[in-house]
Length: 407
Image (cartoon, rainbow, N blue to C red; front, top):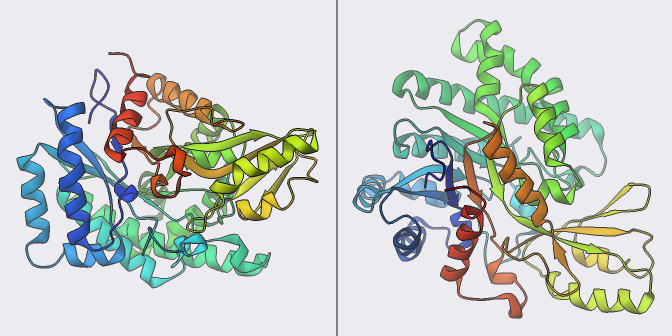
């Protein structure tokens, strides 16, 4: 849905919160949740969808009349799709996901082929006058390489060649249809790209120098114009939870990206868990008990702690961090667990909601990004006392965001 007076910002929620990998299950979820939300939130105007498609769903959607039926359903209900979540390749609910959410990574042909299907699906669905975004894995996952810098560099180089092939397809689509699509790398803790410095380094060391030469060969165009094409079609998905866990200031991040010509193509609105680590051991014991239910077995919940001299230390998952809670010297923990964005205080626990507010203010005052996607995908694994009606919760998250925008 367009949420500003000049209609330039689109807001949606990501359907990765609903279980189901096959297209039939995805479509059932869309029919169940989208029309009621539109009736409550945007009864008179088109309502946007942030669609998550697993690999198997992309294959099925491109068969028979499935894509045609989806387009007809969208038109009938005054709906449109402007962004896809292409991060999780396979299963994302009711199973152990953990680090397999990064597999296959961008060095693998399976990731390339899957993303090319996403590109062609979005090109078919995207309405005219709207650009299309696809969020994706931030190249790969660092712990797989056990600090092998040479192997990490090899993966980054292979990933670049595959990303450039996606860019070439997007350039072709724009020439033929006029539709602008972009792939958006989504930095997060422990990924090969996890913070601003690593993003900038990747663009400067790999994407632009390697990509310019390869794109020129693929499209038979001058290398001088390839850099602008790469920066247009490869952007960043700024997840407010992920950057908050890294203790990065949104204003600084946006400014650094701008200075290097790196665009933000999509902002995912999500909140991380945040706690102040008490000095008293009995209070730490109580805090550990409060955090324990969040150390669930489905997703990775990376923890980054900060001590008094601003030094950061990483834990690959919350259960590992909890084992060190009694003896840590840190002042604060931030945990990659997407909690409902409309609550800031969870009894001894807080969230990084303030970062979301800052980002929404930035978006309104600067033409930084026009795609906003609410992404609290953890409703199934929240502690029991936090589980409420899903439809009502989605609506409440929308209303919380909309309240931050002037009428």
